[in-house]
Each structure stands twice: as structure tokens, then as C-alpha cells.
Image 1 (cartoon, rainbow, N blue to C red):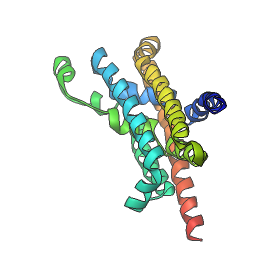
Image 2: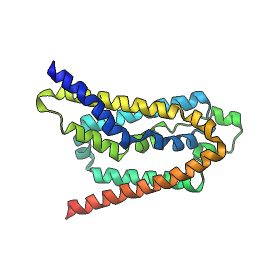
Image 3: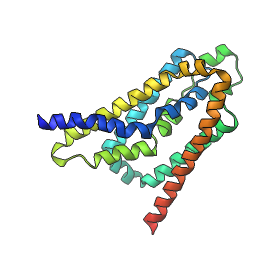
Image 4: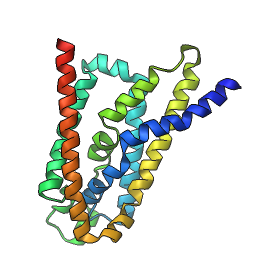
Length: 218
């Protein structure tokens, strides 16, 4: 019984440790830009799918992280650089255009609503929600699971990860309220500000990955 109580005690700690790294609020401007011309139902579907995809990615790296890295011959520094480059491209788009791909389609409103646009996996789930930092955190949790309680340990980390991704879903699903509160010009301003901040985050990811590459070679 003490083991289960200990697992319950660690559950909120897992959420608290993962949530700031995932930071779903930083994904809201990107979500608003990409889903600008989608219907409310389609936006909610995108938010739910992005959160579930993020959970799937983090769960895969939690359970199979070392095997995936060995199979493809990649490393966490490589994941950091790749994620940083993807975020950098998206950040430039937000910074200089202020609109995502969904807003740039030259079609009427009804045609845009019927368009089968899906940004849920990339870039919303990965690398925005389940980025290199989140992957590193869950893999770090896996390394601290006691060998005599592997099933309970992995279940606890998976539960904490799922709760965190559901918090991300609530944040993205509430993006419409944020949109109405800020208005079109407010969204553009926030998008450009977040584009600048995402550029800084991307550069930090790339710099950290390159530094770890150099340290590993040295």
C-alpha cells in the first residue's frame, strides 16, 4: 500500500515538472494562426488530436526511447537541433507573416471550412507540445523508476503525462475565447511577439544541441 501512496505522491510532481517545459500557452498563438479560418468544431478536433498525438509521442519515448535512439542512430542533441530548426521556420512565419498556412489559402470562406487541413501532429503535437525538452523530461523520469516497481513506475509517469496533455487540450480548446478577447489586431500582435520568443527558444534549442554535440565529440 505504501508503494501506491508513494506513486500517488509523485503523480502531481510529474505534472508540475513536465507542464512548464511543454508550456501549452506558448502554443496558443501558433494554434490560432494555423486554425484561423477553421470552424469551431474543426478547431476542437485539432486541439484534441494534437494533445493525443503529443501524449503518444511522449509515451513512445518513455517506453521505447533508448531503443528508438539506438535503432535510428540519433541522440537527444540531434532531436534538439531538429526540433529547433522546425520551430525556427514556424517562428519566422509567425514573425514576418503573422499567419499560418491555413490563413494563406486563396479560397472562399465555405471552401476553407471544407478544406481537410490537419496541423495536429506537426507542428502542434511535435515539436510544439512534445518537443525535445518534453521528451528529455519523460526519458529522465524513466531513468529514475525503481527496477522492482517498473510497471507501477511507468504507469505513474504515463498518467502524469496524460494529465499534462489534457491540460494542453484545455488551453488549446480555449483559444477561441482568447481570440474573441484580443480581436484580430491583438492576435496579430501576440502572434508576432510569440514568433520572436519562439525564435529565441529555437536558437536556444539549436545552440544547446550543438554544444552537446561538441561535448560528446570532445
